[in-house]
Length: 241
Length: 266
Image 1 (tube, rainbow over the protein chains, first blue to last red):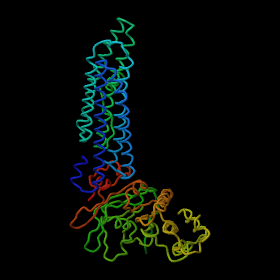
Image 2 (spheres, each protein chain N blue to C red; image 1 turned 135 degrees about the vertical axis):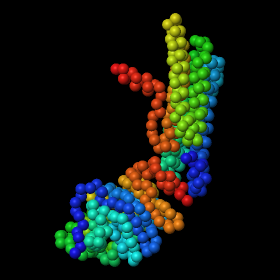
Image 3 (cartoon, helix red, strand yellow; image 1 turned 60 degrees about the vertical axis):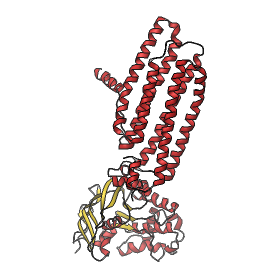
Image 4 (cartoon, rainbow over the protein chains, first blue to last red; image 1 turned 90 degrees about the vertical axis):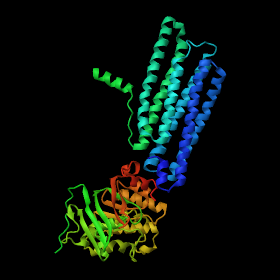
């Protein structure tokens, strides 16, 4: 049951309810800062706009500051309100979620850094799948945060499945870049840069899964890993041995 | 001739309430309680005011019978035998299952006599000085009072008085100690001392504590029983959930428990 719903049932702890709601809002603000950073970092790379990347590189400090601000609020709430049960699960999970978001911000910073380091070197190939990976990852993140706010277990359990699409795109980018490398070994460095970009985006989707797992935990108290097809591949391999 | 209570300790349960109901005259205070009290563990009873926590606690050593018109149905098993069997002597019940109350209530006697008195009337024949010292040690009070054993127990601070009452309860060598809000009249430091003491005592005794302080229940107990009024008309209370304390405070099963432990019970 969501906090707002419970507030209708019982009128107690209104101040605490309000503070919890503020923390949730803050998590959403941090989430949208990260979403924007990821999309903009890929856009800057696509356009080879180094100035934009430099600005985004600096922008990561704001994301980190927001994370510390929320962390501090959570600490104060835990210390002063002694949360139990659902409240405790929510506040403890928020700690985890903001740390995931902050790391996603670092991936955007990493992509900006690659664009800066590439300098005058042109892109090895026009970016098509990489922006798609970013778009899908951000879309997953956005819906994962909505599911978190609404404590929507069903949605939280289905989003991680979409990670397969990101993984498939990553494999496609990998294969494509390898063909460039085979044709011209001098392209190794430029291929490597793009591979790192794709890898960062692939990690974004993995971290969305962690957020979804926290949402399930908040709502149900069950701490379980949501299976992805990566695991299925691993288990299939183990069985064949 | 009263039948002596059993001494066998085969079961994990020292006490067990089975279909326990307690009435004061026409007023049915507690209904249908089924909970175990596990050996060498601390069991906390929590719940809002007036839900029957103290009544349930007192049923564990037949203290309710001191009020006229009390009746009990169901059973309380102590080491497997029903405490309410007509052949059982309630006096024996109360020294095998001791009690510490909310307000420290030392006898208006010396510290030494507070402990020696109970043991003496229960026929203690050993070395009294040793018993007094041992009980004060167990109650973590010895170092503070060893030089003033002849002073009045009432001259001690509130926290010390409460530990004296615990030492007094230990003097008759009970197996179970029932504590009714033992720290609610104490400051945080004295409270902490009582809580630390409980952790020491559970190595040798079984403890049941009633507390309004949920953080205290969460800190000290191994198991928690959540009580609540089940019928607002009759104002009868029961245990709605019993579980490992860790479960009660992190993922309780009953929504009413959830609302209570998160402070939303209106």
